[in-house]
Length: 195
Image (cartoon, rainbow, N blue to C red; front, top):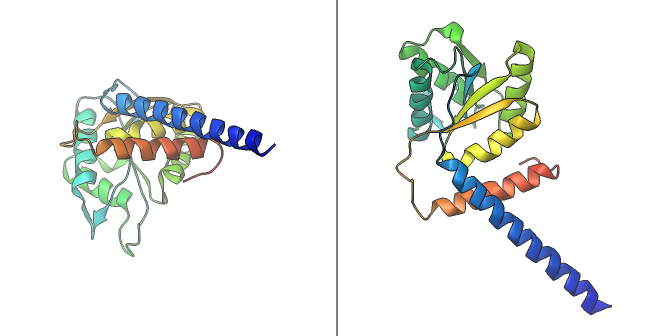
């Protein structure tokens, strides 16, 4: 009986390893595909901000979203991200201010200032879009992040196109760790454990 239990455990572990490998490869493939096309809104996923200034990662995301906006891919931008421990600024308001300084009208920017994680931000984005009657979005983030965000928003019934920010890390072997982490995050979310 003990051998049967161990065989079952090994079988589950092997299946889980294969599934995570499959997901990691799917995430890697999605990470380099720009699907941008006309949509209702461009969603910019938050990243760190430093006392009111976007970090290089957040700035890269904002610059890419701004380029898409200027190409008339969507009439609105939606910035996401909470305070992350900053008592004054949120990632989303820093993003909004950055975009306004670059000529985007304030009325074209929607702010989601509460998200503490990808799960929280995507839930808030889907609710904002539902309330505003928006049905499609271009998601801007780092490439390794796009697959999971797309799946979460698609689960809410939205049409989502990924558009990764240009990154100097493309082809870097360390990206595989990020792809794997996203695979684990996606798997946990899909079984009801939001991280």
